[in-house]
Length: 337
Image (cartoon, rainbow, N blue to C red; front, side, top):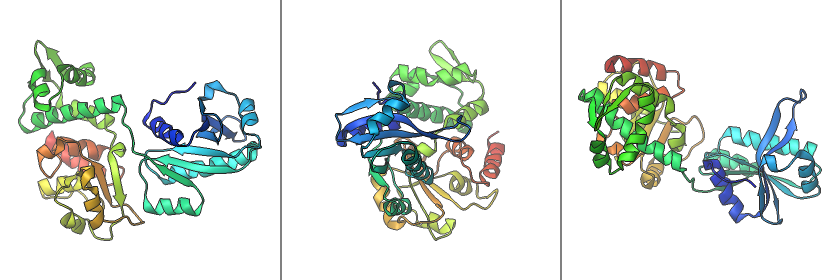
C-alpha cells in the first residue's frame, strides 16, 4: 500500500480524505510510438468505491484496466501552484486515458494550494475541476527553512562585519533553536570545507563558496505566494507598495546601491501571508505578464529592514530566469568579493 510523504502527496491525501474511493498513484495512461516514453498522471480515482490506495508497484496495467472498465473516473494532477504545465498534463492525461482505457466518464482534476485567476477561468471553461488545499510542509522543508535562517545570519555578518568565528550556542540562543539544529545546519557547509568546526565553535573558511552553496539549494519557486500583472512601471509599483513588504532582488540592489546594471521589469517582495489581502487590494489579480511576485517571508527576514540583505539578494538573483538577473548578479558579486 502507498503512503503520502511529499508535499504534493499531502495535498493529494487531503483531497482523497474528502473524496474517498479507490485511488491509484502514478498511473501510466499511454506511451508514444517508440514505446519508451511513458505518459503518467499523478493519480486515478474511482469514486464510490471502498477507500483504498495503491502505488504504481501495487498494480499492473491489466489489473488497472479491469478496475476502471465501465467506471466513471477522475484523473488527478497535483501541483503546489496552478500553472499552464499542470493544465496541459491533465488535458493530455484525459486524452490518453480515453484512448487506451475502456472506462466511462473521465473527469480531469487538479489539486493545488494556490491558483491564478486567469488559469482558474480557463479550467472552468474546459471543465477541469480545481481543488485548493493549504500546503503542508514536510519535516525536511521545515528543517531547511531553519538552516537557511542560520546560513543567512552567518553570511550577513561575514560580508558586513567580517565576522567569521561563531559558537553554536550563540546562534541557538539568538534564534531560539536547539544546538543540534545549529549543528545539523552546518553539515552541508562542513562537508564542502567552507566551515571548520572545532572545540565549542566554528569558523567560516570560504564565504564565497558558502554563498554559492546556499544559492544552489535555494527553492525560490516554493516560496511564491502570489503573482500578478500590474499595468504600472516597476518604479510606480515600488512607490505604491504596501509598507509591510520587504523588497528583494532587483529593487533591493537598486535601492541600496543607487544604480541599475540593466533595466528590469519585475518587482519581487517578501510578505507575511496575513498581509497578502492588503497587497491584493492595491495590486489585484490580473491576467498578463506577471511583473509583481510576492514571496513568503520568514519571521527573521524583517530583522534586516525593508531590503533583503546582500546575501539573500544574491541567492535570489541566482535563481531568477530573467535575462537581466545575470547582470545584477555580476554587479553584486563584484561588490561583495
